[in-house]
Length: 161
Image 1 (spheres, rainbow, N blue to C red):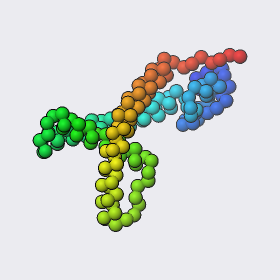
Image 2 (cartoon, rainbow, N blue to C red):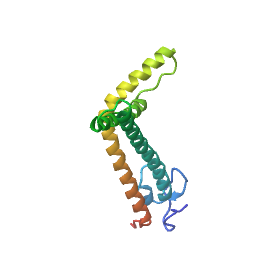
Image 3 (tube, rainbow, N blue to C red):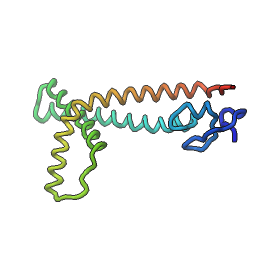
Image 4 (cartoon, rainbow, N blue to C red):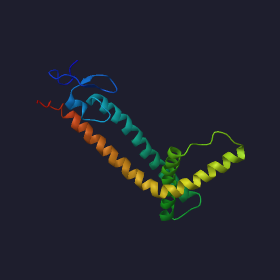
């Protein structure tokens, strides 16, 4: 079998997703071993979920700010801070859910206590995790865009020995 992109070179590996043959140069480009097309597909899927996370955060921020302005009638500055707490709470909730398994059984009272404690911890942890995750998400989206541009530039030439 020869490399999919470099027909003159023998394949030394296969793409993890589609099993195309890859030469040593192509196989060493990405981890896990992927052809360019499969890398772009994977990155699009990841980017989509990252954009959804950012969109959810913005919606929670807007809704939390609007709620704080209309219901308790907070001044705009305090309402924006309240919206940020809600938004960062989303990232804190994700942080807790990723690292600690949820409850699988218990009474209704146990569930209510669990959810309330998780909400409080989410806001507290979200104060640190929220800004960090937002910046990390934006940087990851930029990396995905740069990788897509790199792949769009064309296949890499093989190294001749």
